[in-house]
Image (cartoon, rainbow, N blue to C red; front, side, top):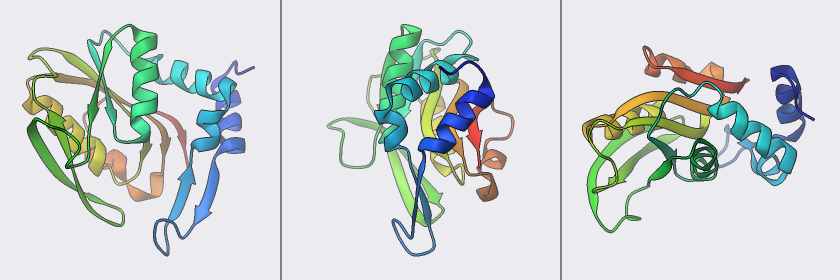
Length: 177
């Protein structure tokens, strides 16, 4: 049973698989699939992600693993969930935002008509690396007229400095490596 933050950290460390040189040489990929597959770990992660959430109207899940966490968090909070997608996945796009990854560039898109002005959103993702994905998601949410009430991530790769790109925002991290 997971009772404390240190119990959760120990469980996560035991389950997260490190895959060297993926998706390209020099990158150490943190595979969270074993965490999602473990019922005790998954429940504990979702509960810990939403614990500091103040009043939110919607959860934003970032493609792709953020969809898993975001949907579970929204269910637990009793809110709706909105997916922020990679290009070419949405039939009607209202906005897009480019960003830099630790090993390339990418962009995200928000579907038209899914966020309402004034909604308070919790952004949920699996990993905080350089902060580009989270910052791009926040920009999309705010340009749609909603407010980012907080960002919650399972794992932070501290050496990549992503936290710095999110200065001034409420950031909740379950495990920092």
